[in-house]
Length: 243
Image (tube, rainbow, N blue to C red; front, side, top):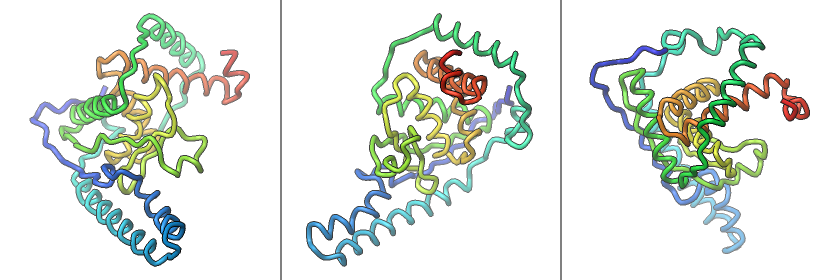
C-alpha cells in the first residue's frame, strides 16, 4: 500500500483550456484550410484560421506545461514497491486465482447502473484527484471535459480513447458500456501528467477501486479481469473465449 500524506494537501491547477473548445484542436487545425477551400475557394483564409488555431493550441500547451512543472509526481517504486523497469511476472496460478476472485466479486456485486458521461467524467476526475492527493499530498486540478468525436479516431480504429499529451484533450471514440469509467480514468491520468501506459493503468484502477462507487469499482474490476484473461490466453481470441 502507498504511503499516505497527513499534512494539508497543496493544490495545483492545470488550465487545459483547449479541452473547452467546441471542436478538437487537431480537427480545427487540419480542417480549417479544407473548409475554407470548399466554402471560399481560397486557401489563404484557411491558413489564417489554421495559424490562429495553432497559436492558441501552442499557447495553451505552454501554459499547461508551465503549470505541470509544479506537479509532485508519484514515486511508484517507493509507494508501491515496483515500477515499469522492475516488474516481476505474476505466476500463472496466482493470476488464475485472481481471475476467480474477480469473477465472484463481479457476479456478487453486479450493478447495471450507467452514469451519464458528463456526470461520470466529473465523478471519475474527483476520485482520481483525491486518490493521487492521498499519495502525494497534492491536489492536481485539471479539466473534466471529454469529447465524443475527433477525426484522429478514424485513424486509430483499435483505440477506445486518447489523450493529447500536449493539451490534455481527451476523446472517447466509442461507447464502452460498463468499462467507460475506467477508460475515462485512464485518459484523465494522462491529463494529470502521467504519460506511461502502465502508470495510467495502475492509478486508474486504484482510484476507482478506492472510490466506493459500485459502477466505478465494477469498471476497474472488469478491466483487470480482461487484462488477466488476455495474458492467460496469450492474446489468442479463441483461447480468450474459452476462458
